Image (tube, rainbow over the protein chains, first blue to last red):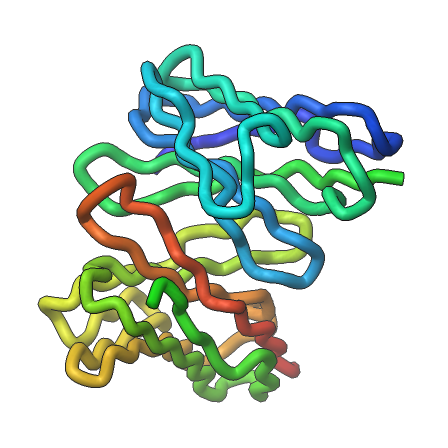
Length: 114
Length: 113
């Protein structure tokens, strides 16, 4: 398994601003993922962030809105840009364990946009 | 074809009873089927997972039953406890590509004392 931390744990932001969420894992991992979970809903994959390559975005998510960095094998950031109230969600990072299908999730960042 | 359908949406079970949550998929390329447990304010935690080469996997009070021909799998929680009250998500992924997880819609389980 892996121990994953996220910062901040929660934030309240004004519309039009941007927020960068950090994800730190306690071991080197190849695959990191960013998900969005709207209140009371399931998880939707935003993008896959592998070290050394550009993030791969899912349909409906674009780099200009959700730029991602992956500078090394233990860290990634997701920025939510030009926020609107519709961006209010929980943002979760997860890591894929090399050699298995297992994915482990961080505690999430609860974002409220006013 | 990428969807995973999950039912029921919510479930109330008495303490000591069996909780059963069902999922169905269409894409036969899926070859890994995990279940996640999520408590309010927490990230999902991997509970148990199965691959299609076995029909059942048991870990403690949690059992996955897998029916490859029907493209269905289910989670059984035996002797359900109030501490099991949480939201449960089934998911599926493929060995190819980035092994992205496709999640079901979730089941909110309440175990009454």
